[in-house]
Image 1: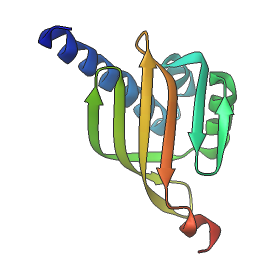
Image 2 (image 1 turned 60 degrees about the horizontal axis):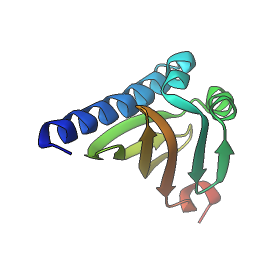
Image 3 (image 1 turned 180 degrees about the vertical axis):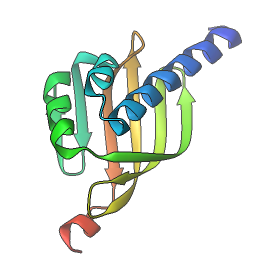
Image 4 (image 1 turned 90 degrees about the vertical axis):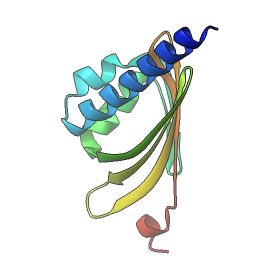
Length: 119
């Protein structure tokens, strides 16, 4: 892959992931859904979701807010470090997003769950 194609791919991947996060923050769940492959998968510390519609329905209930601290991209993969406000608590987290055809195919979110679980 040429350097210019690599830069364009990374740029597009970052734009998709940040559009997804910004849409969730704005509670624009239709726009957030547009950034996801239909059969996307999510893995987190507290559970997993299979399918974009299932994931978005859960996000409509949870209404998390994300404060992105740093973005890293490598071709069709994007890593975010962010604070996630889950209501009563804010959790420092890392999300690893993998894209296919400029849509999110899968992502994993890692964080220390002790503040949620009560240590």
